[in-house]
Length: 289
Image 1 (cartoon, rainbow, N blue to C red):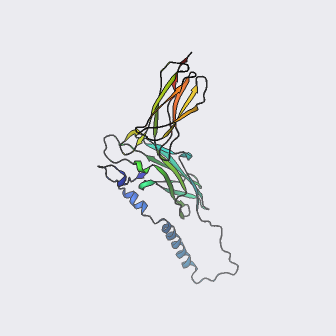
Image 2 (cartoon, rainbow, N blue to C red):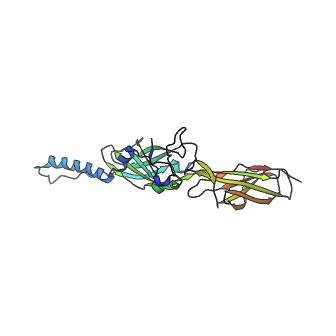
Image 3 (cartoon, rainbow, N blue to C red):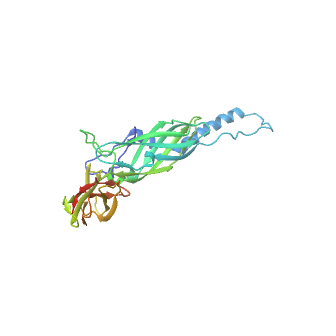
């Protein structure tokens, strides 16, 4: 299970910081030193064995052993992680690497803007692949007043920082081996009127762009964003951009277009660095001669 601590400064009044003993112990690990301690113990043992021994002139050093390597990390199959305000979002993080003895266990930290932090661990499913599963949310559990995982300030680019253990007792820590975008969910509405309309007359197309507010557990208007107005003819499957309109101070959209043929009108928001994309369902307008 993933564990999280929400930074107090990113929460609204009345909320408290959640402090997990497991997280405190985990984040205090001196990861490189852990590896060094193991190597030191092995070196000391070897020294005891060879005291008083005379090296053979024909002895050849064993160079077959290699250092463990973490080669990469893929989050959510390469897709953004988009979180709303009603449901948990579950996604995998797969770490890949190599070692002569094979990888055995992985402990993954995810670190984001303004102190965002998750951690979880798992046994490796193959000698070169280790997959963990994270659960994140931005909503209160029923009947609970505990702070939720995410604050608005946590949206943006997150880093992947794995600590991987090998079957022969070695380990390697690879901070920043991967990254991904954790974004606030967005929603769009559309209405095209009048319906039906005479050919050549004007159609008014309205709508609203909102996005999840992780601090208030509601959706709120997303202001000053460019949104595409698109049209699809009745017997076509392809939408074409007709105009681009910016949302106003409450996230509302409004423009007028000329009625030419029967078809569907929709708004399309492609997303931002902190907010996921959204498309409205097409609104059909019957154009009559």
